[in-house]
Length: 112
Length: 113
Image (tube, rainbow over all chains, first blue to last red; front, side, top):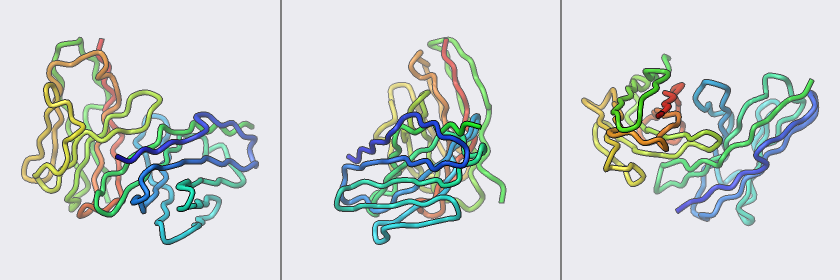
């Protein structure tokens, strides 16, 4: 089955700097890659997603890139703010199987 | 629209006791998922319902876990008897028509002592 690896497990960046989280997946049939943000005491919330027919997608300060050949995808957060501090999960899914498989998460700390 | 509701928020039980969690999905969402999230890990799917039928329960430890979704709306997840390793947050999520846009509830944090 699908396996999603995510790194780093912890990331600290200065406020205003950029943060990058990287993931790899194993199943070449996977074609949908969402990113979730989980704040303390809350469930994960979808922040952005990308499908395999697109190489990059942006939404304000957040962008995702996908390299199908290498089977890896990344989340980029620019101009980081204190409210970006949270745990971020990447995930993968495929058309024939709508289960979403999650990575282990990255705890992002924004330093003042 | 109202979100996914879960209760209770917290539960502490002794090992070998039983416990039940409740989930009310977003109105109109046909698909409901239960995930287990152990501290420091990503959510792991336990069971997926489409309306009131089970689509996938391959990761559900059926010797102790059970789940049902009556009338295709609310769902309950039960553990009997609980083990120490069941300590985790149990998340419920729902989506439209097996779509892959999930909405998660806030979860139930279970501590087994």
